Amino acid sequence: MEQQEQFTTRLGFILTAAGSAIGLGAIWKFPYIAGQNGGGAFLIIFILFTIILGLPLLLAEFTIGRSAQRDAISSFKRIAPGTKWYYIGILGVITCFILLSFYSVIGGWIISYLLKAITGGLNGLDSQQYASLFEQTIANPVTSLVVQLVFILLTIIVVAKGLQKGIERASSIMMPALAILFIILVIRSVTLDGASTGIAFLLEPDFSKVTSKTILEAMGQSFFTLSIGVSVMITYSAYLPKHQSLPKSAFSIVGMNIAIVLLAGLAIFPAVFSFGLSPDAGPVLLFHVLPTIFSQLPFGMAFFVAFLIIFLFAALTSAFSMLEIIVSVIAKGDQAKRSKAAWIIGIAIFIFGIPSALSYGLLNDFTIFNKSFFDLADFTVSNILMPLGSLLMAVFVSFKMKKSALYEEIKRGSNISQFIFQLWFILIRYVAPILIIAVMLDVLGVW
Ligand code: PFF
Image (cartoon, rainbow, N blue to C red; front, side, top):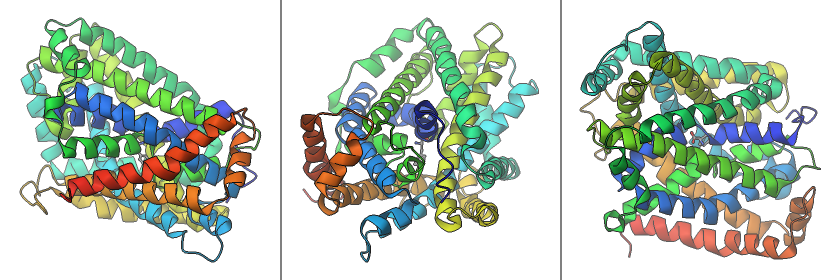
């Protein structure tokens, strides 16, 4: 891989890794899953998982990546030559392939809405009309496929060029802009009539709604929003210079992620309740609610366009990371191969994603295990493959890598104490594997 191409600053690295982390997971997925799982209780369990499992696992991936300085698969081969541990990297590649196939569907929805907002197609409707307009839009097979393709093409073009050029700089502007727009939205949302029910829904936990499924979803969601368990963070940290602090980077990314999730929740739920919509509407929730909130703001549609552009950007920076990990495994630093691989894999992902794109229209009634293609792909990635990848990663780091080598790598560029290191090691070696296995077995009904 391109060892000579490194991040210019730690901030650049943080923003790019945060760019992978912050995306549809926080902005689109969190509100609707929390909406289906009782709101506040889900939020608390999600935050707990993020701190107890997500943060240590993120640091673990950074440590693997920066010590090996290779792509997702070669990193394992370098650290554990002659073993089969590199299958973790292969698992990550497969996971990212499936992930991008449905992620691009939502990316396409954003593009559709952006075009509608720019051309005035969203002016002056009420909340029910916005809801049905959205349902019609995603049921149209041609539109759904075209916009999904556009989203994938944008991803291919950037990844084919090589990752750091442009992304690092663009992330540095877009991420703060996203936070500012969200703050404006939150202010509007919490000052709507009847907003307090939504605020209470998010901030007053009702644990009576918590089931084993809620816990699995909260764990899956914390892995999903941090992009962990799929070797993406290994791939990115391989580009990180040795003098940068890994723990600080991990803390910043987790902090930003939780902040964006909270902002998204505070922007959406007060509005959902104020407009009499249902918080458990599922994947369409965000698209029902946002146009309604924006239409109540002065210059609302202009704001909505700005929001959609930034939202699209957040989705793209996550999509880049999914394609990047597959491409870097194949290209290994060869620019000609990089470009070809990006195109071939990108198109293959599009084809694989067609059934997901049609899940809300033509294939509406087609289900496997009671789930649409879209839901099945999402469930497999978020609740099976990502937890499994994270589990294997934790076992690899804490049982296969030398503890002294881990300490050395983590200490480079940081002044982390022996105590914190020990705590991290215990979390990775014992707490993470036991918790992940327990939650997965629980859902299978083993207890
Ligand atoms: N973290 C991204 C989000 O929350 O939208 C999703 C994601 C990106 C997951 C990259 C996994 C990944 F490898």
